[in-house]
Length: 220
Image 1 (tube, rainbow, N blue to C red):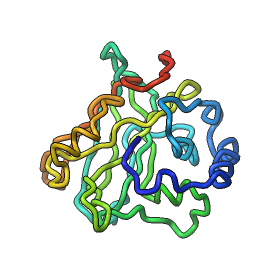
Image 2: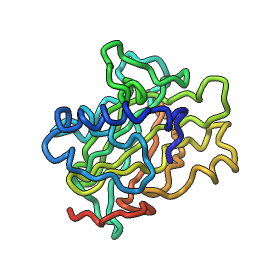
Image 3: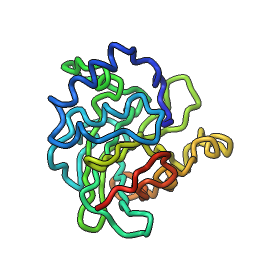
Image 4: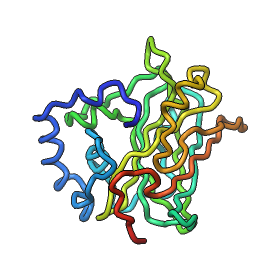
């Protein structure tokens, strides 16, 4: 499962509340998207607030969010290497201090767990998606590598988490930590960030269904 401080913290009651909100909060067809690649206790949170038509380039962290700017981009491809459009990529992350910041109005337990730095991007005709964000921090008082959680939503077919985005230049990403985290879900999640004039650029390509148990082979 993706790196997270409290995956098992949601109670049965809270999970039931999350599930009951999906039909009301998600666009048509999203609530009928089955979760695969189990176990995943919080995958359904990716559907809460899902826009009907997410853009290909989206602001994950606002411009005034403190931290080093990061442009996280990549292509969504199928098992044959062909680009796939219309696939939704959901991301959430910590702030620069390693905390999942909460918005005062977030009453839903799942959204509070993921924090306010969350967004959706849909791959364009060339399979490209982009999140404009900041580099996340490690969890306070820990040696947990910096990471960004990613989930794939193939509407009406499959929802699953993929390997977190990890940064090759992160001192906490030891050989042992990299080996443990790199499961190849959706392709490799370890990226090599490159300095740019206004921050960092990193590329994380996504291979649909790769190493996802129970993946049904969603058609385009």
